[in-house]
Every structure is written in C-alpha cells, then in structure tokens.
Length: 235
Image (cartoon, rainbow, N blue to C red; front, side, top):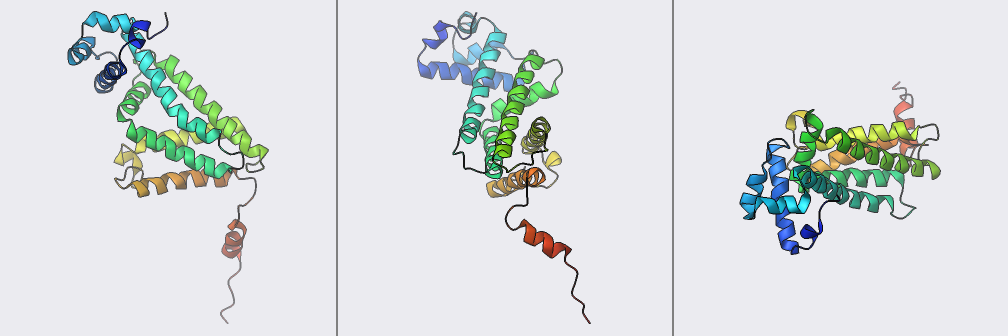
C-alpha cells in the first residue's frame, strides 16, 4: 500500500509537519534500528496505533521521509538544470555545488540520516535507497555534461558517465567535509565563515570545469603564455 495513507494526508498541515519533524529527529539521532516509535508518539502525544495507521510501519514512515528529502534536494538542482540555455556549464556546476552545500547545512537532520545510511552496512533499505540516490545524481550530472558538450563547453572526447562519476564524488566529499574539520584539512569547507566555504566550493567546481573544458576560457591563453614564456635576458 502507498504511504502515507489518506488518514495522514487529511491531517491539519501543522500536525503533519510535527509528525514528520519528530520522526526525522528520531532517525537522525538514533539511526533506523534504534529509532523508537514509542519515543516519537510520546513527544507527539498521540497513540502508537495512529502512527501505524498513517504509514503502516516504521519502514513506511522512513520511506516517506526519504522520499520527501529527495524531492526537496532535487527541486533547486532541477531549477539549475532548467535555467536559461545560454547559462554556461561552469556557472551551472558552481551553482550546483553551492546549492548542494546549502541544502546539507540548512537540513542537518536529513544530512545526518543520509550519512548514517552511507556508513552503516546494516542500515535497512540501504542498498535500495542509495542506489536510487546514486542513479538520480549520476543521471543529473551526465545530462549536465552532455549539455555542456552540445554547447561546445566540454571536450567531446570526455565520457559523460565518467565525468558524472567524478563530479558526484567530489561533491559528496565536499559536503561531508563541511561537518568534519579533519576531512576538510584546512581547505575551508568546514569554516564558520560562509564566504570562505563558498570560495572553497567554487574553487572545486572551477577546477573540474578546467579539466573538462573544450578549449581554454577567456584569459587562460594569456596566463599560459606568460607562464611558459622564456625569461628575458638580464644581460
């Protein structure tokens, strides 16, 4: 049966929001196995049976939360993908990195659940749900690269699937480093200062774009010529 059931959809929006917020908090703090429906309903002040009536089971509740989270992160990324066709690939990629980082920081509970899922082998639904996330991410980036190739911004010899894998891997590590000074290693992704984080993210996107670029971007030729030009004879 599809989740949630009509009994949940018919609730007052504020009450629906409370149910989802408390449930997300429980999964974020305790993982899936240790998450307690009793604690959730206790904080909500409702009967345990009500939650099962809404979602059928703890798994049904978790699946619904996961679907909501996935749709929420996809919204800004779709907006970037569907932006003005004249927007260049480097700008699109920079915006994707900034949007992904902003989502992770503004939705810490969703991000914590996701990290638990990626690092815990015994997390129920791990394979099914992570495959879905990875497939959608790689499809998104592959289409982004293919669009860049169609506009002559990305080298035609680049395999879109390989480029998508590289971009997704760099972004995933960057988002993880935001919460870990150890993984950040002083690069700036874990900095408290927002402009510093944004500069670090933009630098990563820029480096990827330079490696994928079909031809040197404006100003690059001059920089390269200056770098390789022989030094003037001091004598």
